[in-house]
Every structure is written in structure tokens, then in C-alpha cells.
Length: 450
Ligand code: 5AD
Ligand code: SF4
Image 1 (cartoon, rainbow, N blue to C red):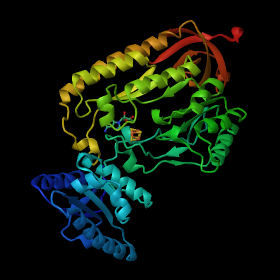
Image 2: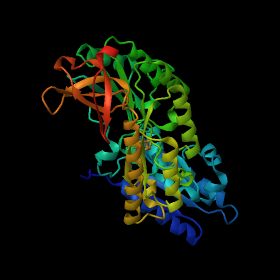
Image 3: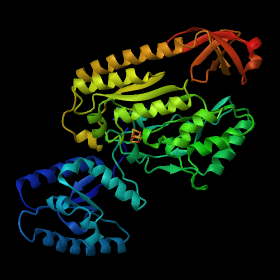
């Protein structure tokens, strides 16, 4: 389903050469999916772009004088309760950079010729600074932008939203546009809700957020996700805490330490990497390299050696060559995943990647996805098989398919099936793992060795 997008007016003034004329058209192209239609009159525009040129003398001064006029129009719009965004692009933007913002504070953003694909991000950030959201024509695709549905829980496990939105602007992703800026719930409210859940019999909570490890309590200075987890771990009856989804850049020392120290924090971490090629990661605007991600995993494993690592992957990102894809496979081999989600790149108009060169042919992306999934399934089976013979604490969540059976979860989020008395529902009991498949484990109660 596509949402109705209000038309926003875009005025582009092009100076100089044919190259700039071409660039202006490209800027209009990347902005069209965000609801911008061209207008010929700047005073009515919601967004004014001056695509500048400094080949001739005094060109820079001409731009500043034009900006002086635009400033007055912007003020008039503001007085009338509206808003105008002013962007300077082109060679003067390149040459002057931040100086433009200092000399003319009415300018909202400056974008050099190499960075037009970043316009959606820059405009979204500029709107955020005014407290607005960008009304983008993004079809809802729950697969990518939704959190697991929160349930009013009467069961043993529950989801608890602690954070929403995203400031990361990965170039393939709609979330920063659809969900807006990163926002955290007060720790006191989260704690109160967790207490209510625990009193209702919930034994395990999963803290939710699009970027949950960017959590920063608005009501307790310096309290990040690690501090929140430590607070919740003190709640009587709440034996297990998980969180999802995290970004590598926000995986701080405190959170890594918590994995080694907080017993209730389960040894499972969903930490998307998306790709293993630095060139692709850079084009994705991921803010990490393959190497820095692998080092991060090593530090997390040093704190909690048995932790199960899960990830998200995208294959067929624009510009991804065979050698880039090989780098993804190689990273997967280095890390060793317990589970993973992998997707074929899906072009979302309005995101910077949609306008990138080198879109990958669907058949090539299909083949890569299959090769990646084959490797990931192998790793998942190996991780599950490695539990055979171990005794794991299992939280019993629901009845199994056959009478006398229960289904529970291991600390590593694996589903465990076994014969067990119904009275164990909602309890944690030791289970000796007897066999393992791709998606679940089977075993028997090991109460005597508890
Ligand atoms: N194409 C393919 N996968 C995507 N994801 C997000 N946007 C896209 C897209 N345009 C995937 C990422 C993210 C997960 C929730 O969805 O891997 O981590
Ligand atoms: Fe999207 Fe996640 Fe990247 Fe945010 S961090 S832009 S939600 S993929």
C-alpha cells in the first residue's frame, strides 16, 4: 500500500555549465519520490536549491547576494506559518563548504557535487532539526521497517519497546524516513512496565527498538542500554532479558561488559553487518568496516565466549561485484553465525541507493542469496549440533504438538522440544540436549543434574 504524499515544491536555480544542468535534473530525480515537484517561483518553494558555479570571478558573491534575497523569502514564509529549506549545491558549495553556513545562517544545507545521492538524508536531517518529519512516499514493507509486533502479554515472554527511530541513514533503508529520529522511552516508564509484566508472570522480556543499543534514557543522564538492562535485571521474577535490533556503532564497552556480568542478559546478540566488502559497506553508509565488525565480535566473545551471534545481510546492493560478495562469504566464515536473516537488495525509491549506478541483475542477486543462505544454514545447523550432550536451562513457553510435550527456549533463542509435565510451563528447568535440527533442539529433563 502506498501512502498519499503531499506535494512539496522544489525550486532549482542552475548556474554555469551543462554539467550543472544535468546535476540539477538528477537532484530533482532523487527528490521526486520524496514528494517534491518542480516550481518556477522561489517564493512559493518548500525547498530551494542553488546549484552554483564558480568558474567566473565574483560568482561566489553573486550566490551570497541571491541567498540574501532568499533569506527574506524564508522569513516571510516563516511569518506566514510555513517553512522553506535552502540548499546550496555545486562548485561553490564544494569550494566554500561550511563557510556558507557561517556567512548566511539562513542556509540549511550545503551539498557538494559528489554527494547528491545524500540529499534525501541531508533534507531529512534538516527537517528533523525543525522537529518535522519528511513525508515520503514509501510503500510500507513490514519486512524491513517494522519491529516485532508488541503483544499485551499474558504469556511467559513479552516484547517491550524502549526505543524507536533511526539516525543511521543506511542508504538502502526507509526507516530513518518512515520512523523518524532516534527516540528513547524514559527508563522509569520502561521499568514500571517491566514490573507489571513480571507480576503477570512474564519471565523473559525482549527490549525492542530499531536501534535499541542507541538507547539513551531521557530521564537519567548517561543511562544507556547497559544501565537499563542492569536495572531490569534486578526485578524479581524477570529472569531473562534480550534486546533487538542493534547497530555495530552503538555497541559500547558498557554493553559488552554487561554481556559478561549480567546473568539475566541472554547470550544472544542480533548484530546486523549487511555485507563483508568495505566498498559496499561505505556505499551503504554503514559506518563500520568488515574488519572493525569482526574485531567487535571478538571483544563481545571475550566478554561472553558462548554468545550466539545473529545477523542481517543484503546481497545485490548496487555496485556489488563477485569479489565483494566473496568478501561477505568470507566474513560469515570468520564470524560463525548461530542464525541470520538474508535479503536480496530491494530498491526503495527515495533512498539514496535507489539512485546509485550499478544495480545488480536479479538473477545474479538470486544466485548470491542462495549461496549465502546455504552457508548460513550450514552454520546454524553446526551451532545447534554443538549443543547436543549439553544441559541447558530452558524456559518453557507453550505446549508442544503432541500431548505431554512442551516447547521452550534455550538461552541462545533456540526452540527446544521435549516431554515434560505441563506444570513446568513458565518455569526454567535444565534439559539435556539429545538431538538438533536446523530450527530446533530436542532433549529430556535433566532435573537430577540441576
Ligand atoms: N533491501 C533489502 N534489505 C533491506 N533491509 C532493509 N532495507 C532493505 C532493502 N531496501 C534489511 C536489512 C535490515 C533488515 C531489517 O532489513 O538487512 O537489517
Ligand atoms: Fe535502517 Fe537499521 Fe540502517 Fe537504521 S541502522 S538505517 S534501521 S538498516
